[in-house]
Image 1 (spheres, one colour):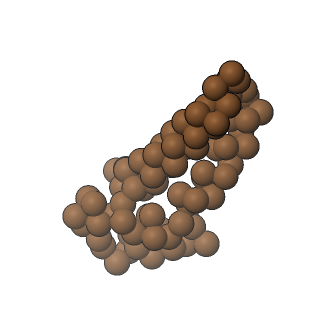
Image 2: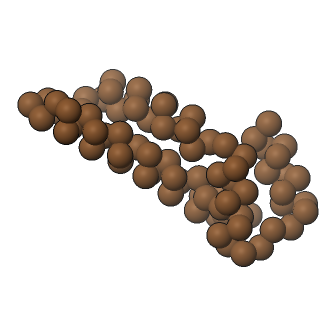
Image 3: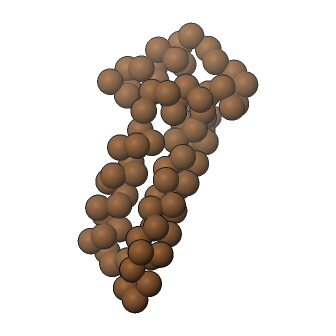
Length: 79
């Protein structure tokens, strides 16, 4: 499926960034837990870090197939 490459290229960095930030919050505040409002704030910040054209392109490169039509479609979707 065409969007699988974006899933691989986007969700992996998002998961990594989000997990790192949650671990940092918990390490800095060991007596507290991450609540739903904090989850939304953390997710929003980390989403912006991972939602880049460079991330999308690297996802396609990881799948070892870049087609001109697919790259054009990615640019149209992300712009």
